[in-house]
Image (cartoon, rainbow, N blue to C red):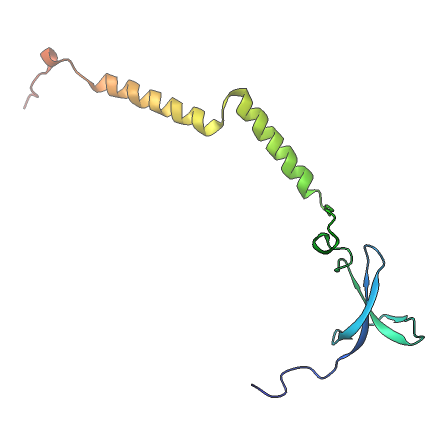
Length: 123
């Protein structure tokens, strides 16, 4: 194993979950400018996180939808529009395919010449 590849600047750091305000202290090398006074009266570096084990649905058992940019709403709207279009009369690709098949069949009929009308090309 290589020597001196791991950082040696581990120190106690307080992590604060912004969802529920939960705080915990652990050793870390993360750099931060903010500090906070801990329960023991000492001041420690503070790192604010958006989600931690105290608020993550996997650990809490509660399903919580975090939709900051409305992605879920846009997806639901697209799905409802697609379902409505499908119920209205099928999708566009199927209509186009049917139209092309009908056009090909018509062109094939136009090419067929009855046997009695075949003439030899003139030279």
